[in-house]
View (cartoon, helix red, strand yellow):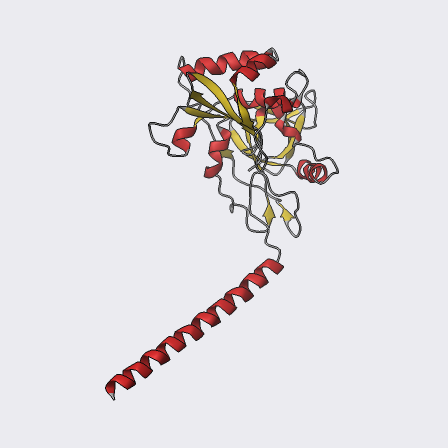
Length: 286
C-alpha cells in the first residue's frame, strides 16, 4: 500500500513539473514575441546598423573624455622596422610591396570569402585603399595576441590602429537606452576644431587624444549613403576632408579626418609567419 501511494506521489510530482515547464515555455515565447515587436534601439556604439528609428539624437553637454592611447610597438623591434618600411611603401604607392606582404587569400571583410589584395585596386595610386591603410598604420598598434589572450607560443601578431582594441573600454549605455550617440577618437596633440568644414575657418578649440561624438549632420549623411543604391564607406575613414563632431559643451565643430578614428574603421592585422611579416587581414566594420 505504501509503495502504491509513493508511486502515485511520484507520478503527480512529475506531472506537476511537466505542467510548470510547459507554462514557462509558453510565457517565454510570449515575452520573445512581445520584445521582437517593440523597437529596441542599441545604446551608444561606434557603428550602428544603418537603420535608426524612435531614437533621439544626443543633445546637451557631456564630460570631457580624455583617452590617451599608447603605441605598444617597441622602438627598433622587428615589427617597428617592418611598419616603418610599410609606411614608406604606402607613401610611394608601392603596390608590389603590398603584394609581397599580403597572404593569399587575404581576409578583406566579414561574411565574404578571402581573396586577393588586387580586389582593392592597389595599382591605382588614387584608390581609397591607400588612404585607409595610411590612416590605419599612421598611429599606434596593439598586440593582438595579448588582446585575445593567446598562448605565448602563438606567432607574434599586431593590429593597427590601436583604436580597435580600445573599443571594449567604451560604456555603450553611458548616454541612455534611447539616445543615439556615436563615439569617435580624436588622436594627436592640440588637434584644431574648426567652426566650418574648411581649415581656413576660425578655430573653436583644440583636442588632445579625446573621445567625442559625431555630429548629427555627419550621422544623417552616413545613413543616407549607407542606404543608397551604391552604399559608400563612412567618409571619415579617409585622410581627406573634415567631419562634424559635438564637443562636450554641445557646440558643433569640424575635425580633419586624418585625426578622427572610429573603432570599427579600417584596420590591418599582421603576423610573423614563415620567417617574415605578413598582412593577414584588412577589414572594417564589426
